[in-house]
Amino acid sequence: MVRALSTLEAVPVTSHELAGEVFDAGDEPGTASGYVTCVAHHITEHDGKRTDLAWHLHYTDAYTRHDGMWRIARRALQIDWIETRPVRKART
Image (cartoon, rainbow, N blue to C red; front, top):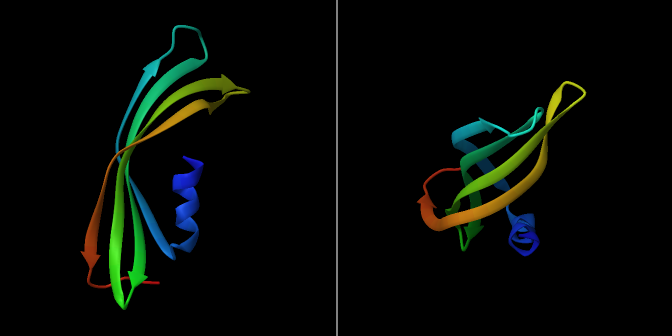
């Protein structure tokens, strides 16, 4: 994951959208689990052409409640697929 995320250092514009969330109470008080789906857009430019490198991904999470606040205790990232799309116009 670190290697994949390090490639984003050269990306001038990103946008992330949540596509869906499912949360379930845990077996113990103050625990829960979740499944969060997202699409992460990464706009890049090469030879004067802009493209959107779109990552379709999901997180599998475990949560704990501490001092009245819910926190992510564990998160696993899974990239489901990646696609490249042409971009006609982008704000950079």
